[in-house]
Length: 124
Image (cartoon, rainbow, N blue to C red):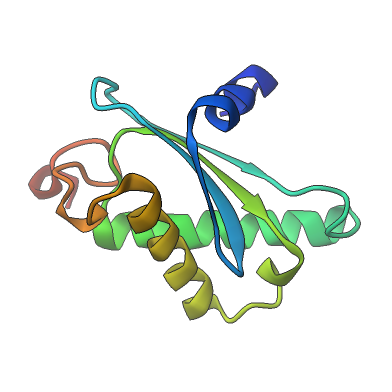
């Protein structure tokens, strides 16, 4: 996701889950054929170098969690916090898993979709 109205739609209609390492906004959509993800880090976190590093850490955590556990279709916004850039990476991934589990209301690992939006068997 890149456009502001897309982010606002997820913020307005979706669920928000806060963890020590990030805030995740989730708008599940079973009819969608793809998973859309947006990343945002405010200027409160730091200068552009720090914000970009924080965004890269979020992107990598999501990539690894999606590869290991899969992601259901829908829209997701990951919001970086001050602690995101300094938090141990394994804890950051655990924060993301916890937020997804809590926000989706189910064990997202049981989702039939893999990170590519295809079935798990097809994604490998």
